[in-house]
Length: 274
Image 1 (cartoon, rainbow, N blue to C red):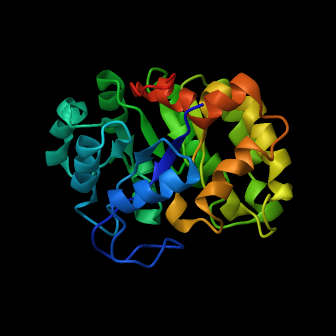
Image 2: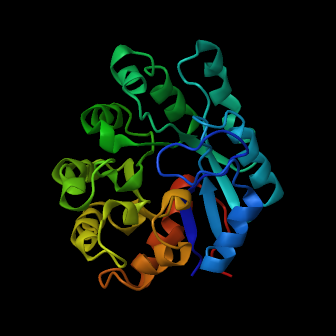
């Protein structure tokens, strides 16, 4: 079984935000070393442009240099009209599979309501570019986009849970999240799960909530991953939390969740059967 991480960051400058490691750089080679130690075969890079404006180029170079290990969900400033033309040739970059904007700030989330992003969704739909975002922060707006653009593949980051909460509070919007599973163009990245628990590994108070999300979206739209540079546990534990500690995740379903489904959803032609 190949294991593919649905989200990591690499960077070469800046001050990492939030709980990310407070280091000036985290290189592709450093990521590969940790991946090898944890038994992770490949990873999807999400450039952290909020603190490293050169991170998109860095990610593309990593995918060019290590095509069997990395692919990219890139980004550019979507509020600048001069950047709209970029989307037409976006997939021509090495390893580029789609787009990702977290939309963490109130100003960025306002773009969902004031028309700033109205051009993006139909353009990405036409170009066949999946988009990932921290939709747990704005589920009603996200649902409107998903319903209006049924041929646009959309991915909800970090389990779709309440970003700043832990334990039961993290699952406060679980019913609203699960309702989105009825839309076949919506998938969930089960990334960053350990962050949502104050309990030690194997985070028993997360199991039921994750099971509900898995049951709703199914193994083909539920993608394991880490966001490793802000995890409270080892990379290997991020892996074994899913491969060993969730009794409801076994067999073909486990293979899909740990990488195959992500590759199929994004069109990542990674060798999965050797």
